[in-house]
Image 1 (cartoon, helix red, strand yellow):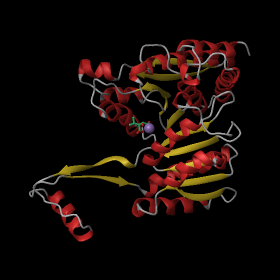
Image 2 (cartoon, rainbow, N blue to C red):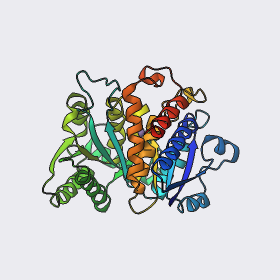
Image 3 (tube, rainbow, N blue to C red):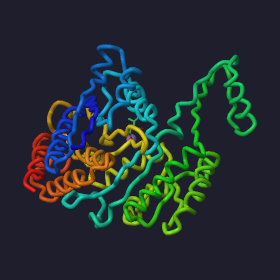
Image 4 (cartoon, rainbow, N blue to C red):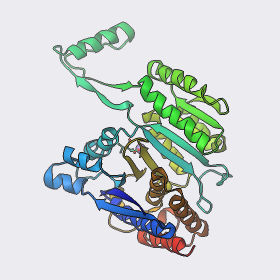
Amino acid sequence: MTRYRIAVIPGDGVGPEVIREGVKVLRAAADAVGGVDLDFVEFPFGAEHYLMTKELIPEEALKELSRFDAIYLGALGDPRVPPGVLEQGILLRLRFYFDQYINLRPVKLYQGVPCPLVGKGPEHVNFYVVRENTEDFYVALGGRARGSSSAELDLLRSLYEAKFKLDIDVDRDEIAYQLGVISRRGAERVIRYAFELARRKGKRRVTSVDKANVLTHVYGLWREVFESVARDYPEIETEFAFVDAVSMWFVKNPEWYQVVVTPNMFGDIITDLGAMIQGGLGLAPGGNINPDGVSMFEPIHGSAPKHAGKNVANPIATILAGQMMLEELGEKRAADVVEEAVAAVLREGKVRTYDLGGKSSTSEVGDEVVRKIENK
Ligand code: IPM
Ligand code: MN
């Protein structure tokens, strides 16, 4: 019997409802394959806990989480808390603390799921986005400045005077700036992961998505690293694409893409687009992965406060995040059992939530996936 300790953070909004179905399905999959024992331990972090205690996620909790095999997260964000507080204080804190430098987001359209792209089906939408997860514009370096006394402002002002036509009045005009940072090592490790993933999954092409024509410093370095890593994988075809162009090509020719690797910010943006072409946010899972540490799995959708507590949210994204977790833990058979059950439920289309045009509840979808697992 292999035992895994999984930390569960249901979080806010629809988070607890979708996580409940995920846990239910993972338990059923573990029972079905045998030899796998999942021990789930719940943690309260999120809006409610923050409003009660003013605590986001304390250092001791992070230490405690580091003794788990993985983290299973619902969603974070609540209208009672200013935007960014919970997202930065909990979600990004976890990603950075555990150095989960890969954000793996499969874009896969399952049979039976309506696709908004005319003439495209499951054979056209099946690729991976590997999003860098710890650098770029997410490093939180920056500030705001006004008034003549600030050294930052003086520097920015002289840059403005030297390069641009706009005349900044230091007493009246405010400047805000934010730095994007890419390190050679940071780019190397995620790009290498993308090539290894391509090998493992039998994909033949890796696309680097960036904006090296404008943000020449950061993405110039990124491209250099991409080229050097690519040399170790001669059997894999490579290409560069700009992020604006890729936003068009994902819609026009999704079948072209196999593995896409991209810096943090663009990865954030293009995976919401990816989610739509795989049938919506209710179907899109993600893994925040540190191959040598504690990884965290979550749906890529948010907490959807307006649907909270109604038992209507689609739990499939969260269930598939659980499937990714099993795979990352090395339990491929259990992972396959989950995916096959989800695929069967989607293919039959009898039990589906409102976002897929159905009337079923969150828990009915979870129960149906469990039934499929048990009947195999
Ligand atoms: C995501 C989310 C987060 C991100 C937010 C909530 C901080 O949009 O996981 O894609 O930007 O990474
Ligand atoms: Mn996002």
